[in-house]
Amino acid sequence: MQRKDGRRRDTDGRDAEAVEQVLDELYATPPSAFVSRREERAAAARTAGRKEDARRIHAARRPTLAAWAANLLTRSRPEETRRFLELGQALREAHRTLDAAGLKELSAQRRRIVTALSRQAAQLAGEAGQRLSQAAQREVESTLRAVLADPDAAGRWAGGRLEVSLTPPSAFPSGTAPPEPARTEPRATPRPKSPRTASGTRAKDELAERRRKRREERERAAQEAERAERHLHDARAEQAEARESFRRADDELGRVRETVAAAEERLRAAHEDLERAERERREAEERGRAAADTVAGAEREARASARRADRLTDRDR
Image 1: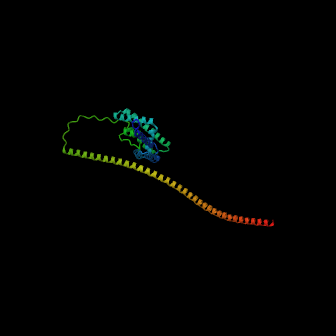
Image 2: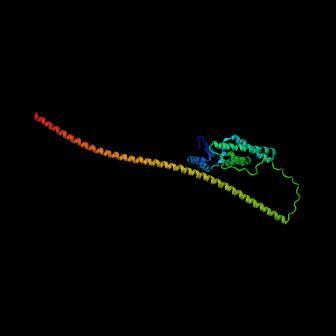
């Protein structure tokens, strides 16, 4: 839209900010209420004509209980979150520089802080009415360890919109520096390989290549399994929400049916009252006509009597 001064209003920026606020709100919502809140916000965006915002909101996936607790920790404890992210950066830097003393100290801090923060997450979830099981709390700890070891995981957690728990990489700092590489002597000029040696090398290379391909296939299969698990999780959540909606609708239908039955009973009684009133009116009308006839007859008789009385009076005179 153009303003009178020729400049465009920054509606796109405000809409983008609004949808980000909605997403932040959704991922702070307990998982049991996530789907209904998401549909409500998406419908509001569609009603307002913001189709792309509605699409983004509807695409938001319900987080697991552990992922939600980790999100809740990020939003409710910003100072602890900042220090924890700084610890992860320092720990990764110490691992890269092979600072054994610093790595050992930071690793001890890591264990203490991961335990303390996971307990805080469980406490925050309990205050929000969601109890974390031991398995869920272990998933929160796994997420926190991943945040320390992986900068990408740290960024995702800091965003406060995790959908599933994070898994730390296998090569996480253990608290001690890796052993120093062994000194190598200058290698002599390699001699030409014999046909048997070359054949063995090719076989090793082929074996290594097959192992690499199997490893990649396993990784792809694991990723597909994770996606399928997430899809199943969302589908079950949607199913549970649909069942709950059906139950509420069925209860409402029962109440409406009772109301209709009561209204029909009142209508039937009203019809009976109407018929009785109409019958009484007809009877009253008939009685009125009969009374009118009686009155008319009495009036005629009274006039006749009066005339007879007048004649007798005149005769006496």
